[in-house]
Length: 281
Image 1 (cartoon, rainbow, N blue to C red):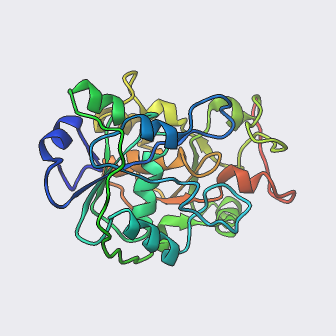
Image 2: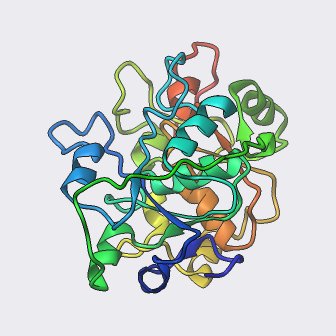
């Protein structure tokens, strides 16, 4: 493990999973619009990395918001983390059974709440299985541990802050959605939302950051995709604040750890009639 890299390899985790300060988190999540897919909680029950606890981004969220999986209050987050056995002094490794669908989001959430010693398993569950890692289907019985939330507001942006950045150009918006949704030529999966993008935003589809094997690309391969933004003030966005975190993760791999994410993302932006929306042919 290197503190200069936000990821760990499956080989590293296999060699270190027994360390007393290591905590493994399964963040598997399936978007609700993927009808017929097995829910993340069920995939976890079918098999997971030994000792891994299940982190549900829809449950550990602001339940009073109409928007999907918005950040919860520090009090709620600390309570849920404590019950999962996640706390101060832990090295937390997050993975996903669907590539990087939600592991980067949980990595970002933990960092927002002040926990810096958190990494993502590169390649997720598939990479773990590829190195012969064992699995289990019973949940662990975690010992509660104190989690001190120290909120990093610099890593989060709300709609008003994004609107200001769009208007005055004070930050670059990087949108992780697929090209068709960004350009407005493909529909949004969420009903009643217009596709398109925030004026001035750039499109960095999350899939472009991954290798064909589902690994986050190495720094030398990420740099050509992100070199125009590494020295800029950046706000990431996507459909609902999940895949955007993969851009944050990629920028961290390039040494830029403090990128902000628009939590409401397109689900919030496009729901407001006064939000400017651009399209491209």
